Structure formats: structure tokens, C-alpha cells
Image 1 (tube, rainbow, N blue to C red):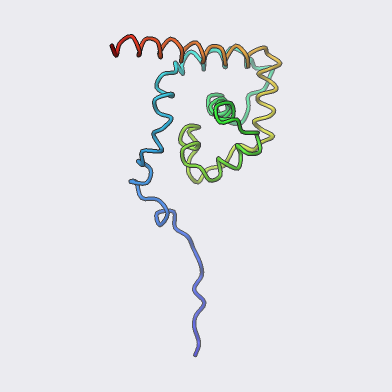
Image 2: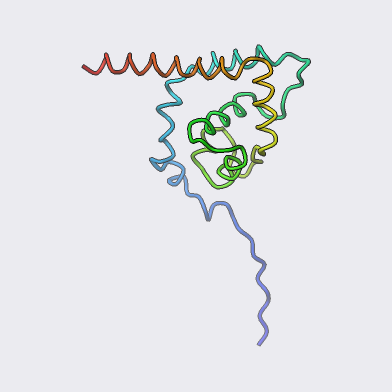
Length: 144
């Protein structure tokens, strides 16, 4: 008996229905994301990256969003790279396409180093903390 060998091909639509991409857990960072003033953060980022620095191959906000995940979830660059391979929530937050490339650990490490060298890393983090704090207090006042 002769069986033609079936070539094994995976089709992305077998793995993801749009309902999957709307799963509540994939919205668990939405609130935090909504609290942040991304344009302000982007302005801070962009101001530091003058033409001399050479822009990274990814959008600055994508890189920075990724650094934030590392801070919030206390992950090393390598752990974070692994998470991005398998974690839809993180990909969504970083605006990485499903089939697209993942930010490698070395890329993110270099990016953080440059932010630190520009004195920008701590500025950005305190900016974000301030934004979250003020929104939180505002929210708490509003709910009474």
C-alpha cells in the first residue's frame, strides 16, 4: 500500500481565530496602556535619539514598550525575548505582528544602554510612574 507523503504545512488561521485575539487576558494591559501618555513618552524618546545615535531598526516606542514589560514583570532580556516568542499579550503590547520578527535580547540590551547613556532611562521611568500615579489618584477621587 502506497501513501503519498502529505507535506506538513501549518496555516496560521488554524491556530488563531479572531476570538482568540480578543480573549480578556489579552486586554489585561489595556488599562495600564490607556493611562500612559504615549505621545509624551515618544517625544522624550525621540528627543534623545538625534541623528548621530543612529536609529534602531524598530520603532522607538516598540523598543521602549518592551523594556517596560521587562520592568513590570521583572524579566531579563533573554526571558523577555522568549516570552515574546510565545506570549500574545506581550506581542500585542509591543505592537509586534504575529508572524513578525521578535526583538532579540541583544537589541533590547543595546537600546537600554543607549537610554541610560543619554540619561533618559530614569527620566522615562519616573515620567511613567508620575503618569500612572496621577491617573490613579484622579481615578480614586472620581470613584467616591
